[in-house]
Image 1 (spheres, one colour):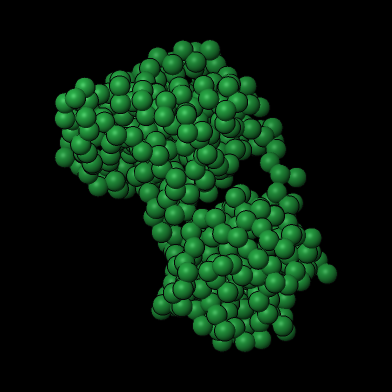
Image 2 (cartoon, helix red, strand yellow):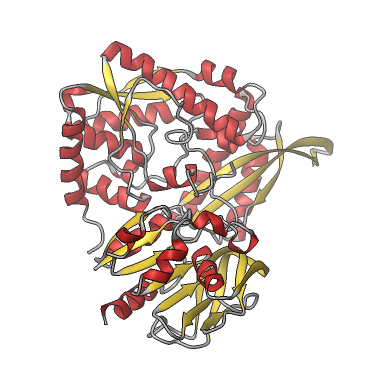
Length: 319
Length: 188
């Protein structure tokens, strides 16, 4: 009854072996639980035919590249880090439409993967695609809510065959697979992080400076909410982060007028990301987040708001 | 038991599949263009929700679905747009909802019938609808909410049910029990 991770892993391994055959494959990990779990399955199924890469887009979480390579090494997954941040920022210059952003990012990822595939002669691209990715990307009668970079954001023509062992799973089931396959806890229990990274947490145009601002704000939200959850002031949220709004408001800092951006804090409870409810964060925790963000980022941010919307009508990420 | 899920394009169509899998029932998601003969082999039919506006001229996008309802004699459950489609097929009025609901809704059960057997009189459900179906002749209303008079109904002549809210999502309380109850009706 329900979902049996052990059985799933056995099936996924044998299916991957028969699909990929003797060819070489690459897999890109983002540090999220989906791609790391897919990498763990692949490293069991086709260990000698696999190149594992991490693309630093400049839109990752704080210390992500370091964190992911160390943890991947611990999990026995050798990782090649590719820095592509200049390419990402220059291609996203002037782009404000969320769907356009996602499609550009999907295309850039494939460019980088195809380049990496050339040097390793890979013909397959393994992805940690899960059910909400293709559901929300839409097709036929199903409306496109957001084009996930690994589905709706893929270019029409690409030189790699896709292998997606987890297409039918939801996040809670992926976590069960991750635990069963022995991924370190910091991966199996880690909060979801969107494929396009901080790009979808910067409303409007993306710049390296805005990426820095939202990265810092996200780190503060993570630290404060994790601390509050550990102190049993609240349940650990399912996903929690900061969003940088393009709205400037008037503030007063040290008796001087300020005119800075607004940060929205989002924290939701969910099982599978398909429905969600805003967390009830104790007021003193929200205050602490607001105080820290406006102090650390005082040059840029002078207002913090909390998003109380459910999914639906909202989505979890803002874009 | 084999369930066929007729896909009207909901974000939660695959959640119906998951809910049934967790109830140990095999199911398949199929498009509305599936030949009628293939549909007739199933034990139960479920019409999913979707973004199509049944009452606003999108009913033509439901492919062979009218024929499925006419020819398939087993139990049928319609969710959201699926419920509106069933209601309209049998003479009801699908129209923009007086009170559209997104996210949390309190469902008030008027008649437990078999579909809500064992459930409390009120429970929390998740909904996501712009439209609703009303004045459904030969159907009995089983539940409502503050803003919506017909959140669940049942045919008085055939084993056909509908819910406007979504029992397949995790935030709906007792959702899996509602599917289990529907499958129990099918096993009879």
